[in-house]
Image (tube, helix red, strand yellow):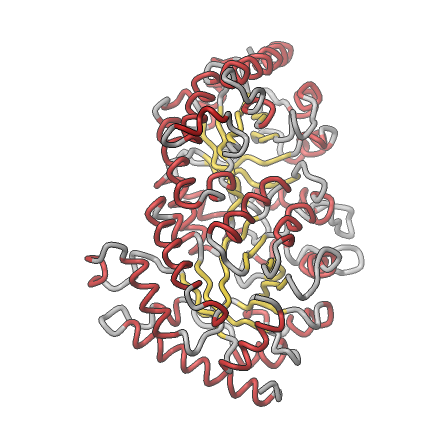
Length: 276
Length: 276
């Protein structure tokens, strides 16, 4: 999916919601455990219940790898199911990979060819040649970690040079030498909504993937106020707040309600910004 | 495996060699392709041919993930086979993970429980709470990226604060608040052998995992000269230089020869430092 297709999808669905499939087998409803692949069954029902309100889905690799080979089978079925919806959704592997060139190339093959995601989250620590192998695939995206939503973000992302430039700003600046808004986005934690103003000065046109609305505690209104641009420029993720809204028989219904609630707020924000 | 066990293993085998299992299915000998799991068969023969000369094995996750579910099956068989050797070897998952706490916890479960590796490489960008979940497992190790061997290392790892402290030094300094030499090592690229002097001032007692000897071009003598401490304190990795020494019928024999060659050099270096 390219930049314009993503923008059109946002206008069509009146939403910039990403549903995080952090599908912890220990938290999914007990009655699903009798099915052959409980995590895939869970994901399928979540996807069906939320697809009208969401533009993106983001499986978190850790929750699949923690079940070894079986977990990867659930992931394969999930991405195959998502890809059945074609250009109705944007798919993100939240894997935070990044390694020397020949190794990043193998990760790119894994996520862009074998699993066929649209985008992959990438960690910047190893620099240019750890990131560029992911940029060689047409209509595939790198979502580079800039400023994350966790407490530890302060440890190194705020490391400051003599001109008071913090590392996350340097990541934003330097990575633009490698790519454009057409194939790169940035992760920006929603707990730092005011930092979005500063970030928008460096990357006015890029899409930002914003985790941390919901369980991690950010405010959607603030994110839109400080982070939205004239092409929306935002994908806002909610994981636990949607997928674990209920752990009863009604889990999918409740997930759909939560997603609809966020979509309605997003529609309002998009209208206020005259995007729709 | 704990710190003393690892040191004793190095003395017993007179080696600090780590064999990198970057087992690219496109590079393994053609005649293996007829077996049920060519990558596992390849790994098994490489392990058998090198085990007397190596203290550690390091599968590189990218080369398994790039084959999807089948790749993970090869990885599972490989680590099961390695674990059959018990405390004769130290096993490292080269996966460079790191995410918010609840996600890192799932990765820890994957690599320390499901696959049961001794150690995992971790990327520091997201800070303390992305690393500490990996430190809660007895006799399991974090190998934190400090200074990597690739060209892109200069992009952010050399980012310098007003006191001329580079980011990789800050990673070394700060991470010692979270752990000790008993459960943390650092990745230090061998192409920067002289940087080892500076690094040893900050982490005199920790083990360092040094990639980049061989195909990536570092010198073993220099690494030992600048990096060895009185408990050796080094694991030096070679991947392609050993496992792809030949792509004919004699691939395992040639791998064994290359590993023996490195072990002999290491024995000499250990003797010169009066460690053995």
